[in-house]
Length: 349
Image 1 (cartoon, rainbow, N blue to C red):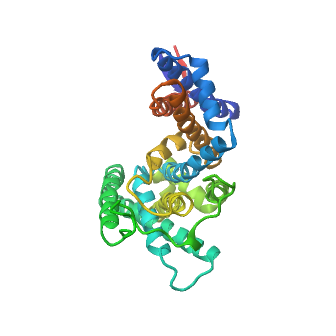
Image 2 (tube, rainbow, N blue to C red):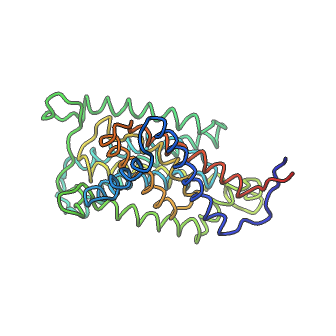
Image 3 (cartoon, helix red, strand yellow):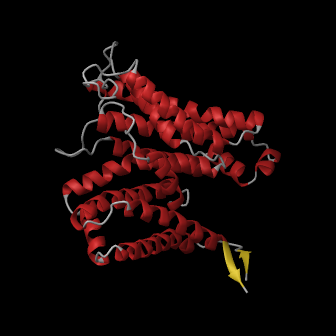
């Protein structure tokens, strides 16, 4: 048996790959549910109800999907150009800290819409700088950005702990490690009454469309994709590879930093060390499930969020460990990698 590269990749095959990967992952996770002694159909019904069975369930799923859309976009943009950004988690946290640093006070008396834009921009800039540094080290000293971005996640988390226990500590938090809250004018309006769903979802959807356009319809997008496919050929064709990679890093890190700022402005209002349950790492899975398509990231993020939210409901109702959500999403990543292999190669005897 050998693998033979396909000359062309049909559109239907590219569309069927993620659907087949998700279906296989659900079947495999169903086997684990059966091993726990629970009814598989009832478990999946509970997951569906927990994620989409009521107004509260739908709004919670979309709230959970909002940062996943942005971190998924961050990873998709970077991976397209072969910038292996494993640091979206740290970029998210640094963006959140920057948002609080700028939005905790409003000394200039900026109106709410303008202050929201300034705070969001601060988060995006902080996240962008955190990825530009590892990429610059890669270009100058050939340092592997996988290592640097991964280690920066832990460094940033320690930095966040230092800030919320020191200069940014809220004196009204009764000793709880939390930062001061952002100004009321810097908070995002809620889209549905008596829910946590906020306007950050609209911004995330807009960014998905913008990134799709940038990566497919602009010179920068072409240069980024060319650099990812073959840096030597891109450089021979006149593409400024180094400058392009730095721009990709700024865009990718900015999207992850924006996710942190939006979580602060829309959900929490302040920074804690448990602000993210792993949105940055989950963004890698979301991007791969979407086959690095910016528009596809939206669907992949909603799927991942639905699994997490629905599994919590299922676990409470049936006594099945909610960690099945992590297993399901991880299996979806593995099956997606296999599906992508089969869309690129065919098996020959």
